[in-house]
Image (cartoon, rainbow, N blue to C red; front, top):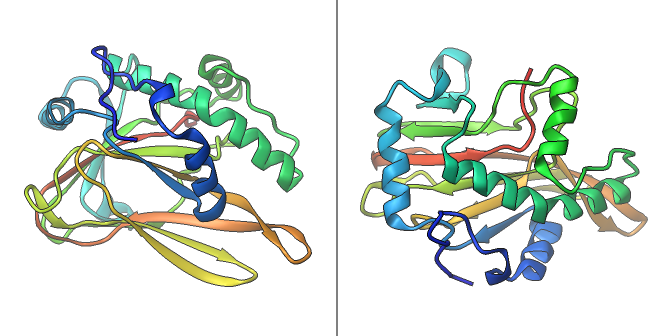
Length: 240
């Protein structure tokens, strides 16, 4: 459902078809939350990229073999809008993450609240914030990858498109691939400005003829043909 966020910038959980989203995650490893942010909220966040304050580091992808483009990790405290979204979305996704781990035979269980999970990360030395903002220009792209930053990994994450396809940029589609014993598959997820995609960080369960099997997932961004593309990524585990 396409419903605008509240005035404080956080989505209203009840306005989305979460049962449908959960089915999409189970089937495809991704699901779209349309209209998570307003155009104004997107523009304000994208304009922050040029600022120096509020970030812990800047990464130029080509220097590390990640593709082309760059991104910045936010420092704590996060911008209030992103902090609120991170908490609200985690609470909705934790039951799915726990069910997946149970199906995969993984002992880890995630607490109901994000702060409790972050405390677990910090006690293990994962203290650096992972929410980030990415900037791509013409010819830029993001190689297929997984965002694993330490021992404690939450199996779902969120990317929010801040730019409008066809107006601000062309190309630059969000891409997911999966690899399992049944073969390989790729998904191109269509997004508009303000839409978010919830997706698998590493692996998800899938039903096979002999029961549950593990499906390995990766994500990336196709080449930007023209213009400039900004995205915010909300990762729920912190990094070492």
